[in-house]
Length: 331
Image 1 (cartoon, rainbow, N blue to C red):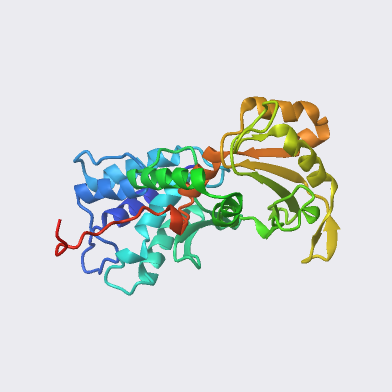
Image 2: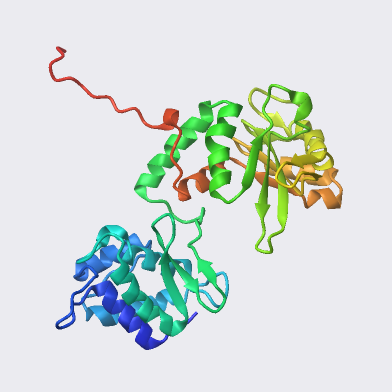
């Protein structure tokens, strides 16, 4: 994805916050130190080298635009994060927090390359490609390096998954996660009436860009899923969920929004522990080819990484306990 040189230089001027003669600036002035901080907030490692600020920022934006993107007509996720940091409403300058003047200036620059910035309902600034009307939102990459604060949250979540129940795993972790990932109509089968589950702990649906729906059934196991001869402790044997997976794919579910019974398109096998390679291979071998492609796996590391990068709040019982000491107490 390429932008015109003039567009990048003008955008760099906005990032630097340079004040033009006889004109009020609506962007915060950033010296060398704060330019490095700015690009750090955009999750990059660029450090200002002391050269002319607008020129350096323009060159940095050019490097960012070289990063791969989902489609040819859209810039990279990093470029989108740069725009979001630039248009953070907390940085309103010489205007109110809605930043309408700053937004107008930015769109004057971006319109040259057929892009438009806008604030969504979440008060975050996004980019829209005007000809295609596509909206660019940075994806949450679960494989990126974590920050120090995210590492601490991840450790707290690991501890929580080690002691929570299966119902807590579903209600406190999986439901918020699936909602954040864009699934609709997430319904819990529950454990009170096993006869009505048909192998499913959860069912939900997902809308494709073509407006078609895919239906998912989810079978949840709290512990490790392996291929040993029998279930041991909190570990579950993959043979135990074989029949549940077949039931999940064979039985219809009722979607009240359309008033019809529908079949599950894909089955999620979710484990609060590890799903061993042997377990995955065993299940793949016993299923026929058509059903094999319908099975998706999600283990503990997948759950934790997705939960953290999507910045979901930890369950109350997973939060670290802060102990305050009263100075008046004798010891």
